[in-house]
Length: 157
Image (tube, rainbow, N blue to C red):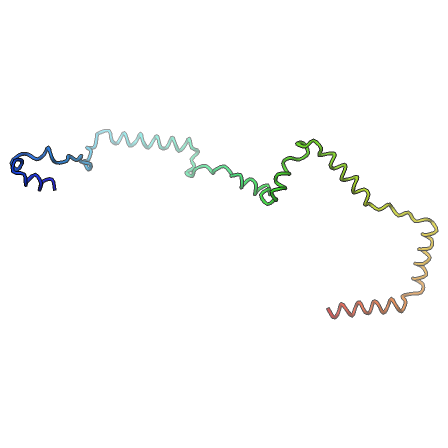
């Protein structure tokens, strides 16, 4: 396009157009092989071997550090509710009353523990006599009929 415009102009038609044309650098120029090319290649190979020896011979990069979520998954903390997550690391040290809470809970629970049953000698003797009497008489008619009903229900189910 530049050459067409220059050809139209009669004053520039006879001149050299090199000053108007763009100058490009040649990119595909082959370099001449230097006599020390073989020596350079040997040096590069030696450096690469030294680097591989320093790196421990592993071709793969080191593993990344575990993320926060990975650590939570391992410890099981990830599956706790938000409230439990916030309360878990605080413990008793932050509030200063961790041991007191345990004591208070134990005192409250103690109210719901039934007192130990102490049978008097008369009651124990009466229970033993009743047991002996039942063993001597054998099963009563009412007990046998109940047992039969239970077995019948099991077979139907």
